[in-house]
Length: 77
Image (cartoon, rainbow, N blue to C red):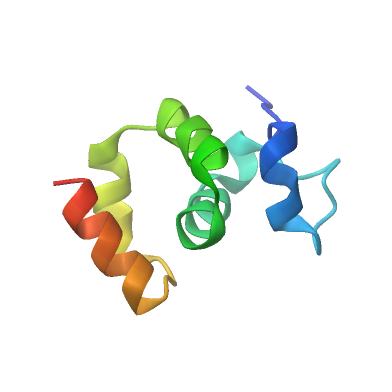
């Protein structure tokens, strides 16, 4: 499936070629970016695309700032 980003999330990927950025090919990067910078609508979309368990598995390897990492560890428990 080549799912593209919703309109409200595109602003967080301003340096990327949006015509090539899609969920199936760039899942980890999209998760990392939206967990670090996303607004409520963008994160809601993200949480519909994946499971909390999958995000929890990825958390240790994601490049999140310390506040975001701590928040998501608590939120996803």
